[in-house]
Every structure is written in C-alpha cells, then in structure tokens.
Amino acid sequence: MMRSWQGIFPLTVPVMMGYLPLGAVFGVLWANAGLCWYWAPLMSVLVYAGALQYLAVGMLAAGTGWLDLAVASLLVNFRHIFYGLSLYHLLPGRGLGRGYFIFGITDETYSLLSASGQVQDRQQALRVVFLNQSYWVLGTLTGVLLAKGLPPGLQGLDFALTALFTVLAVEQIRAKRDWGAALIGLMAALVAGWFFPHYFLLAASLMLVAVLLAWPLPGTGEGTHDHD
Amino acid sequence: MTTTDYLLAALIMGGVTFALRAFPFVARHWIAHHPRIQVLGQRLPVAMMLLLTLYAMGVQQWHSLAQGKAQIAAVLLVAALQLWRRQAMLSILSGTFLYLALMNGWLGS
Image (cartoon, rainbow over all chains, first blue to last red; front, top):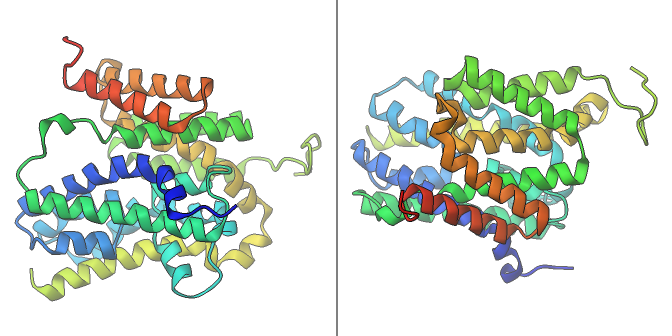
C-alpha cells in the first residue's frame, strides 16, 4: 500500500521534465532583468507559482507598485481557489505538513494528485508536493547561475508538461465520462482564446466555473431524475 | 531594489497565492452545505485538465492552426498512446520526443 520515495519518484518524472527547464527559464529571465540573483531561487521557495513568477520578473524590473503586484497575483492564480475541492482526502491532518501541502498545490501538482488512483495517501501526496517543488527550485537555481542560454538541444523539452496535462485529461475523461464538462472546458478555451488571449487562463477558468455552477444539479446515484 | 523590497514582493505574491490555495480548506464547512460547490469539485478537474493542456500548448498565441502543427501532432500522439496502452511514461516520452524532433528539425524538414 505505502509507496516509498522510490515508488513516488516515477510519478513525478513528467513534472520534473517540465519544471527543470521551466524553472531554468525563469532563472535566466530573472538574471537578465538585472534583479538580484539569489532572490530567484528564494522566490521559487517562498512563492512557488510558475506563471506568476514569470509575470513578476517584468513587473519588479519595471518597479511596479505593490497593489498592482497583489492584483496580478490574485488574477493569475485565481483558478487555484477551486483546486483544493478535489484534494480533501489527501490533506495532512495537522501541523507544518498541512500548511506545506496547501502551499504546494500548483497546476501540475493538482493534476497529479487529482488524477484518480495515482496517489492514494496523505504521506505520498506530501512527498509529491515536496519533490515537485524541489525540481522547480533546482531548475531556477540552474537557470540563474547559467543565465546565458540553455543547450539548444533542450528546445522544446518543456513539452513534457503539455504531455502530462494531456495524459491526465485523457485519464479524467476515461474515469468520469463527463463529456459535458469536457465540452464546457473546450468552449471556455475557445471563447477565452478568441476574446481574451492575454488573460486566457483567468478568463477561461472563470467562465468554466460560472457555467459549472449554473448547471442544473444531477440527481443522486444514477442521475436520472432532476431536482433543481 | 532593496532586500526589504524583494522580501515584500515575495510575501505579497506568496501570501495571495497561499490564501487562494487555502480557501477551499478553510471554507470546507460552508462548502459542505452547498452541493453545487461539491459538484464543481467533481466536474472541474476534467474541464480544467483540458484547459491546462490547451494553455500549455499555447493556443492563446496562435493566429492559425499551422502555428501549432508540432504541438497538435505531439498532443495527438500522446492522447492516442494513452488511450491505447495506458502507460503514462510511454505516452509522455513518445510525445516529447516527437515534439523535440519536430522543433529541432531532426526529421529533416
């Protein structure tokens, strides 16, 4: 039942293949923007939010105000407000582990943990969170130290993250057969991509949540009767 | 920027992000009385995974499908392999290899 660190590691390999290069790119961007180098890995330790960290490079270099930074954080990561809903069963009981688990629910970690059957208990989940953040911090450190260009052969290695999301999408659909939700997701992406390309993820996830909330509740059990 | 500035930036970004991630755990009792929110928790992952796949593909930056040829080909391979063999590492490695080959011109075009 219990999976050791060695047992957990293979699960996180796709995230590692994504986080190492993506973290490195963040480090390179950070260094090239003329920001203090050691704050790049510190950001990856203290903030740990990929898209927001990328965005913050430009904002900090330009001396953007604190309120703008707070609003940007809210907008970019707003979708995270719903991630925990699918992770109650993995939340550690108490203490530091509990706080750290919540802290570490990134897109990729959420994807791994919410995939049915991949991770079964709280300790495994916490290890997945820790391994994933380690990759992100390690990548950042590498990037900020190298600063000048990654080997060109690595061009496109971050596709592993796209592939991971694809696999998890296939598995989610296979497990739940929820074609309605899948279709709503595609429609939200289409509308957001067309009208709000610069706020794609925010716009699409807000539409998604709004439509899913407004959707008539299915009946209990087989869902044949509607009581809405 | 001073050290205080960096620290403040990290606290603002980290604080807001943590608060967002903690919300469903803090508001668990409230959520327990709202079946709609629970249904959302069950249905969201399916749609969100599709959304994140499209976002990672960079569809929001495409002006035509041709721009995403390599992405589309590789994602289709991953999805097909996953449906067929159901081995995540096989699907991911094959798709990533195809994408690297297409992006770095290993296939000679």
